[in-house]
Amino acid sequence: MAITRRQKEVIDFLSGFTQKNGYSPSYEEIATGLGLNSLATVHKHITNLQNKGLLQRAHNRSRSIDVLPATPVASKKNYERLPLLGRIAAGRPVEAIETAESISLGDIIGSREVFALEVRGDSMRDEHIVSGDYVLVERTRTAREGEIIVALIDGADATLKRFYREGAMIRLQPSNAEMAPIYAPAGSVSIQGKVLGVLRKYA
Image 1 (spheres, one colour):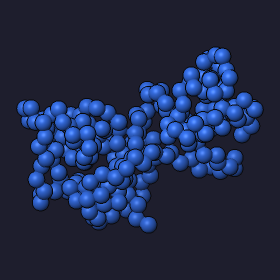
Image 2: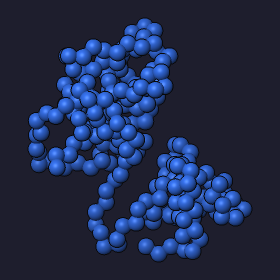
Image 3: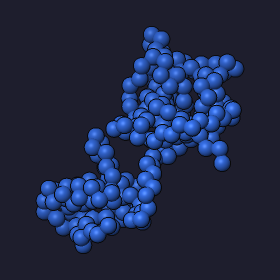
């Protein structure tokens, strides 16, 4: 897809900044880096590039502009990609069931902000969340009783468990009869997200 010289400069700046810093630039940093006087001009370039399928951004958080990999014009495949942020404790292999149904990530995700985690361990095996699976996690700081969440304990240890409040304590319940629940003070448990679905690959 054809782009203007200035749009090419915007993409090159975004790519270079993100590679150097590990996060995407703000509109102000883009304006400064390209010598632009107006944030409206930056917004116009970003919007045009997004409409051309060359950028993606999340409207509900800052520093969320990502350069998408270029794809051939003739290609008819459209893969939705999620950031793989790490690995999380749970599951072991169970029997696979093949169906004739089809589904896209968009059916699960909708307009929500979602990331992926690769599963490791045995704690959620009775939910059929097994080692090697990828859980799709909606980024959120709150959860309802019984939801499967990604919990961060004392700011260091992350785990995948069902969430329950018990007075001043949080019970993080594994779905594995051989494992005991984790109890922690509510103030030491930070919810990172809740599970929307599971992806499994057999090859």
